[in-house]
View 1 (cartoon, rainbow, N blue to C red):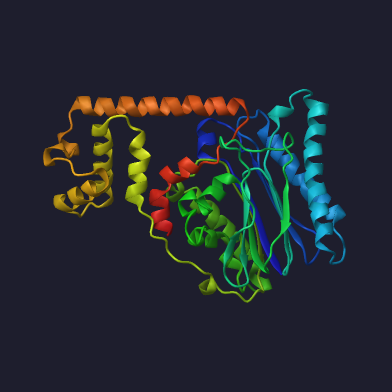
View 2 (tube, rainbow, N blue to C red):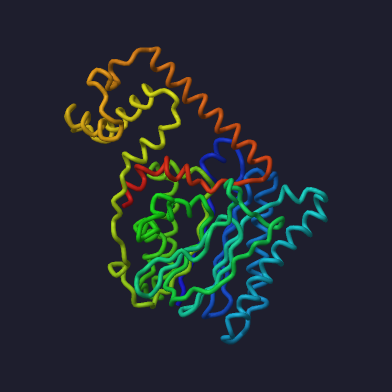
Length: 382
């Protein structure tokens, strides 16, 4: 039996700007054995992003259901069905534009991720920087798809781009998790890129392990409870750095036999201080860099002595003279003004860069944001 749920949440940034949710998500049953999970993320710089994502998820699910072979077939047949359905979704967006807003196709761009799963097989399709991870029957998470961005971080969105990644998981699936990049970049943070386990397993488990060993009589009640708790968590202060729209679509085999304890995970040894020092290297003033870093160390270690803080400070910044070590309580008003001015300039520059990218209908992969915004989040979750 496959348990499933999905949701889309308007992002904190969109709430502040009074913008709608550009994401869409959907779960559809093909038969008693097969289900579809779909998410789509309308490109934020497009005027009608939410329309594009809605058309994409509804059309791809409809076409897969209509074309899906009634009996187990060869892999190429499944690949053809998914690829054709993704092209059909792109075509549907184009037809909508021709009928309702001719000449403005660039205002209707979206990503699309779709998983088609049974208790034994998982097929998938992906376009853009949303993504899919899956849990196998040995308790290991896999990155099923790759995010599609150019060297500048701009997303390859459909229907303008049709770079469809279609394939089959090379393992027996227990669960599949489709996510738009607002969630994906946190479940699969760039911080873990070079580690053995690239998935933040404790975070991923929040969406999936509720259904392991779940009896049919409690399936609906438990699923709704998990969905509600996941939404509450994503909207809480624990996830304050996740400001984009958030969409998740989940499929879980409740009779796999896998237990939560069997899911593989090794806590990575992430040097958060080194990452913080790298983050603040954009500040042009050495004095400001030192001040910000010193304050960061002290805030993260409120019980440390001055000597302990100073020793750690020296480890990452070099060996400054004692009197050069910044102390927050002795900073002058001019120091504060300089820092605010520098930070304001940095934010302004980043804002201008972002606007320029948005004009070309781009969506950053958020690698820098993942590095700078997830220190506390990952530290808690890992």
